[in-house]
Length: 371
Image 1 (cartoon, rainbow, N blue to C red):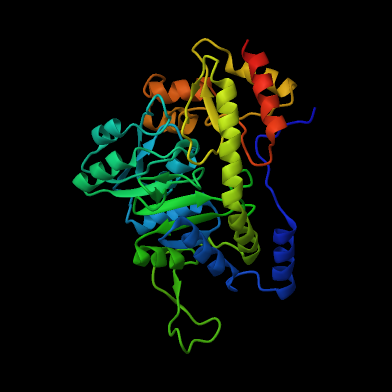
Image 2: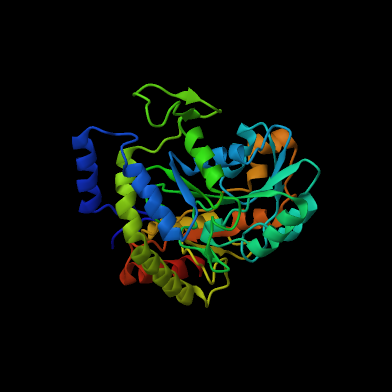
């Protein structure tokens, strides 16, 4: 019985050949492949202007900067997310204001978003938790009434849509991750997308120290101006070469994820667990919440003995991690729904590296572990 990995990057000869070609040309940055990847990405999503970056965290950071978030501001962030969502707010000297989850989906509770708004609030950061779209209609309505910006964290949501639009194109800015276990990979890397072309071009300059050409038509190499603040958040040509082929393969792999998800969901429907994504648009993984009193760690250990690798999304609400707990004086019980999900959920694999036999193996192992 083979070990089932939670996630596995699928790299083919197309990616390897393309990387070899980039290396042979010796042009590793700013040579055209990144722009090709950006153009194909925005076409795949159905609009917007895409900017490739070194990570999703970089996209979130520059997105907030481009939206004008400063140290005087507050940004509303879900308690149940990866810590990068809050860290980028901290990096700007701004204050993350955490809201609890909706108990049956894991995404941020829009009712609590409204309650968290203060005169200092500048933006809302909905995170499409484990690929499940947030309640964007309500969040957009709240943002419009209070004149707030929206930056979507789509790190696990490639392929998810809401109201006929791909996530990331609903707010002001959308940010995607290409980490090795995501829907597609560039080894590391990310993408920012926005329907505001001027904002996207501002981020394009910010990803390379705020550089702009003094004279776009007559400049020689090494001649430039710095017209704004920026950092080195570029994506390399090697990463983009991988991304072009990964993106082309993504639709077929998304269908495989959804098929795997449906199979596992049907097999687990007889057990007393809460599936947080019954209509999972992105099918990143299957997050199931165990009944109170069940030992999550013991069940994960039993699954590991049966060679099924699992994960947790995430090991705790962000405000209860030591850094945020001590800085902002949060306490256990402040975010009850996020805490329950963090403490009682298991993330099961559904990636395209798995076939029917492996999905059946996961279901059998889960049955044995929970009985």
